[in-house]
Image (cartoon, rainbow, N blue to C red; front, side):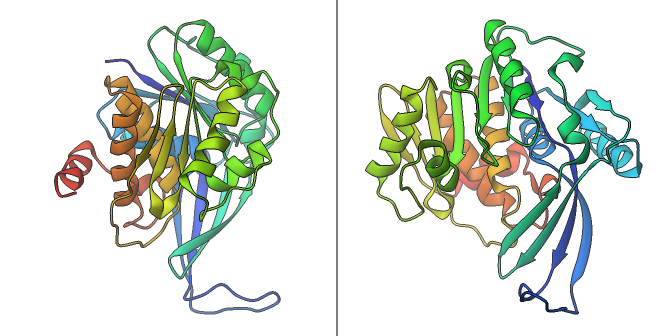
Length: 304
């Protein structure tokens, strides 16, 4: 079994639940608050390790209490966090998540995540590993990491979220690009949204393949996902879910996908596992704490 290495952000999520979102200038009483480990990188690492795959986290935190909490959470979940470096100056990243009416709005203060540097790697990439990155750390550093991982023979997975302009040569080092319909529209400048036909989504994915990505997976929320390779376009159905909080569902998909690739699944099979995991994730409050176990995913698929 190969390990998964997730390079990316670590945040403390401050989750505020309320019956609705306040209007501009309005003060809304009666909300509840939770402090939960998060950040796209940390979420994806937890999703991967809970599928039974050795997982390591690479990133940056500040010198504060949130940093200690996040590293403890990773260690308690058996994630190797020796690659999480403490930097002086900026605070650990924080995300303010407003949850209302089954959906969320997120504001991120990136903090130490913006101080992440590829030069800080304690262990270089190795052949056969699955290296995962996102866009909550500096894009230039992410591009350098993916280039090094690909050159070492690792398999590279890039979640283009949240979307940031990126170097044109980046996709040439990406085996699998994962993004939702909003990010797909931003990355391709094509008109794609949640109501777009499968053909339109697949055509936009092919645009990214034409720019170097080996394969593209577009996640479409309740519609499931589309896997586009040079050989085929495959639709992956979403599983029914009793939605409580959609925060982290995309990260759950990416982390589970990476884990299943490490276990030897082909891309379509891995995407089906990832869709099942995401359907479980949205049924629990929070991001990282909501990542399901391999047994829970198998049980959900057995009932599908």
